Image (cartoon, rainbow, N blue to C red; front, top):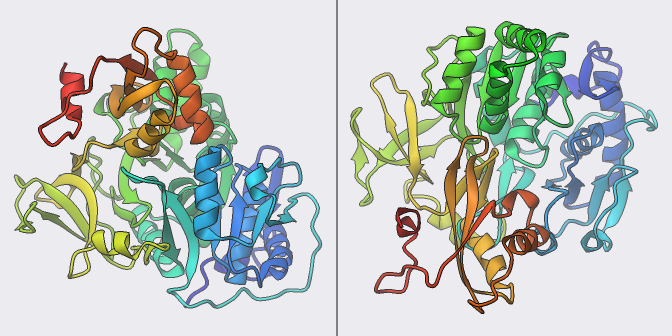
Length: 491
């Protein structure tokens, strides 16, 4: 199999002096990244699995590249994950070591693991050791994804799926080693880590990570050589707001200029509202393009660089990806008027959920198609439009996919809560906000909304905290006792 990251094969090769990644004032060339990852790979070869404390730093990049070089599966950890969720992930994935930066303060749950320090500013240059030629089906990453019920599941992503998705995007977007990608995405999920880090490194290009998103940071990096921008709808909404700002005309003009000059503006992880599409296009003359993927499938569809941008659509299937619409009874649907569940298959798919053969089997049809749970349409040109979820329990907020069930379970663990339901509600900045509907244990003395939000953030992750809490006398239920969530907002 072709190496996942051929440009990093040798610390002293012809590409050694090219910029690979930049985080703030710290830049690593391909030679430096190859040397650092080679040294680290030698220390973890026998680790089995490694956890990566995935901060938005060069240390995370070195750690993940080292794991790939060593042929050791890596489990990216969100540093802001709550104690209960982190404990589940560690128990499920059973890493033997954690890779972390020298200044990272790790939570108690990681104390039992061997800590391997990764320092981007101080590493030994060892002899040139070729990367492992691993089996294409060998697991590269185990990325945890929130379900609508129960704790997160670990999606096992093989090297084959990563290579296939990134090469399909090379074809769709004309992605080359001359491209400089700018983004501020977290490095513990598919968008920021696989597309945003391994994408440019596989092409031999460069990544400039902003650390924290800001319109000023985007303008600075695109204005100094950046060619591509990756973001989630919340980020593009904030760019649209900056372009509309009534003050700061010079800054607004510079932002419009650099956005107009970028080769590609790409949005993903959730639908970008048409209003924001239009505001950015009006200010810059450029269209943001969208793509559609999932943790389990990586990338499925995408607007091509040489295609026609259509706000509200996510483009046609990428090279190698088959896509179909299916009715509830399994009937395959065709025609531009058809609306059905999106099912996909191809080399981009994961191999299964770690330790969950039941969930893996339930996610696939008998003939090997993956059930995405998303509902969509396909027009006459093959462009896909996502209509929504089959279920009502997956919330997309600020680029994150959040399962309502796990938040409900945490709320029900609060002594002041008798019943709880969680839904998503449209939000102009986040896309959707998390909304909790609560029946208090003591109606005369309900807990404060802020107390419940902090309770959720302490157990899970901060982005899962309810932004709004409604107190009710009772939750609407059907004859079977199931909460009728659609009635909550209707009431």
